Image (cartoon, rainbow, N blue to C red; front, side):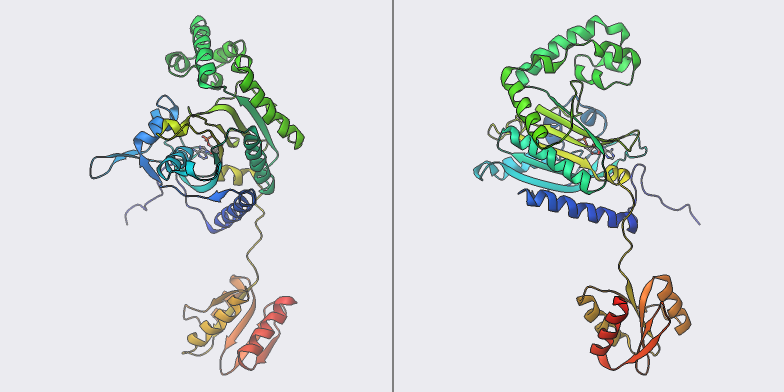
Length: 414
Ligand code: AMP
């Protein structure tokens, strides 16, 4: 026999227990965001490579190292989406959504792909849910989105989570600051890690992200963007922070907060689980006031976040309740499967989980199977219909479907 096939590196199968937890989380996400006026939205799993190069940023790790890029049969370069915001903004432009009432508030859930070194909590195919509010630069949207993610984390049981917030300012402030930072890093070049040094000009901000000790010493003394913000950007940030405080949300302003995507302006934030060690980031996001224009649309501010489903479930307790008590329909004689289907349908309409014998087992084998799947009641189709309470072993006859349904209900209520 040949060696069995396996799921590709960095991917995984979702077993039923986990699949149920994911569905429950999706329900929480849909409810929390839906009640706040966010509409569900879907974009394709692959897009033109150019969208991510332009949207996420040429110099980011994601675009430089982590994209699954391929050519289609016509030689077009396509990429499995590494994140969700670029696709949503592409759709906003493509469908002329600037003509709708603003802001347009959307949420999504689906698979994303990054060619990273797999480890606990980090995969090559993972699942994100995200929310975007496009078409207004009002700081209350930044605060609302942060509070909504906090609520989802709490309701999913993935808390406690630390919240870090910062502002990246506007492109002009940032450009001046980046020049200042680049000059500072050049001065201390010899103390930096090779990787940071090689990319000082491309992406000096990544120095704040480095594990390297020498680099960390250098950035501790480096100029901080927060101290260089324009008065308007500072006001915007203060308004966001004020709303978080008013809502009783604790946060830390962290001037070293770096996000791995280039499109952010002003607010950036990240939630980190206090329960997870490495790979503790549950979700994060920020404002992207230039992205829509960058992708060919009218100048349009936007803000959003994305959170990792696998991370959320790693941080939350695994306490998904077992499925409801079940009914098993056993068949003592051949030719009764049609009746069994009809009864099953009738019980399922009442919201009861019902399974029918479908493997040609002996009666003894069928009762064993009923036990195995945790059935609370077994209905036996023979010369008549018998309803068996699997806990007490009590069994009684029933005349016709309606009486059977009543008796099944009585046992389930016991
Ligand atoms: P990002 O936009 O890169 O901050 O991603 C948002 C969230 O998605 C992160 O906070 C993680 O929870 C999750 N995430 C990102 N990359 C991965 C990955 N490779 N595997 C699993 N989850 C991820």
